[in-house]
Image (cartoon, rainbow, N blue to C red; front, side, top):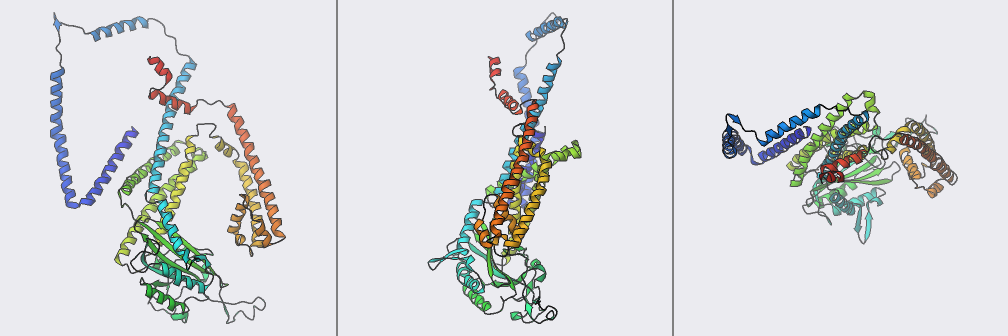
Length: 630
């Protein structure tokens, strides 16, 4: 019954969706005319044509197949079927006189077990069918609006244009920039030499520049210098220092040319600070820090000669000085052959020591929606995705109401199911948000092509949606092991982890303590000389690579000839020999316990074999059934 309701509702929704699409395509007047014609034909068929057809067919069948009754002396002749029925009644009256013994308790238990297994096998088949259907729907929804292969090709093409460029019989690398002089050289030669500021495609590519490109600078405020040798006498000194970037030290005031005096003039120039909300730009993570979306903006003209002249003029001003902490080169490209947008951010991060750290972000995505027949099919699949979400939500709520709260949350798969539901609702919200942002962006950009096209927000929501979808696919695929829970051997891993949960929690505290101790030691000893230990998160990643079998003995030896080898051998001894072996021992002990429990408990039935046997019986492939038929 539920399957019939599901098919009926799904068919109605799909038909309604296509009717809506055709209505939008043909316009209001033709849609109204079509609706009047549909109502007229429907009521004519239901009230006139079909009743006449039913009466005519019934009359013809009655006239063709009617039979006359033969009477003799006022008594009706008994047919052969009636005589057989009388003989069956006589046989039943004779057999009822004999005593029938009741069925045994063992036979009734077997019947009851068979009925229960019928119900369980049907539930398993329905669950497997819904699972694989949902997996197919999720894959179509995730991959329907993105082509990973084409996106990778476009991204590599852009990287070969701006990051690894072949110039003057040599390969020029973006990461060769080390100071302001080499940065200006990169902008003049590589950037302006490759980016198209006119109407033809980029050199060596088929991508077009969307709108303008821009430079965005973030600065810090000046702070008085403090000498620790004589801090009392120099606390109010006129000397000024330039600290590294931090959120509290960011400069957010507007100035006149060359940062001479502060101004409140509302005219927007490259010396005017603009907030992230006014620029509609989100914060971005760089190599050294995370930077806000605001800053001082310099938009480059689309004309290549004017752009070069502007770059030369800015180069000879003080627009970039000791207070500069990062310069962003932001632009967006569009490849019409594959309908893909590429958001490019080139970062030049300035340290307070004067060194420049280049870093780049390239993100390729399709910001158009429902442009071809396949994407229209994906739209129908998205409707099924929402329907399945409601079905699973109803089933989970029903399960929660049927069970006690403690029993419900004691099941390990409960958290996986709830996580999948939360991710699914998040995907719907993010997809709607991305759709609105992209449509608003396309409408805004179509009004004026001679301005910077800010696709950063759309790229952020698209990347966030992609990360959530990837996590959903991961959990949905892992949920396949839930379908194998009725198999004792396949569920042994989950039972082992569940049995060892107490020991594993205690082990995690020990592991955390040793990891913190070694990480803090490594940061303090090697943080000033080795890149892999320059901060605490990077040190934890380096230590994880150590455990996975990727050590760096010679790097530690170069960092400190005494403590480097000592740290290396102590770390290997503690983690790979002691803690790792202890972890394996805990799992082996729990596995041995679960194995004994499984051996002592006889399984009621083998569900897999029973389901396969039922399928063979249904398809008339069971050997016993064929033998009986012969």
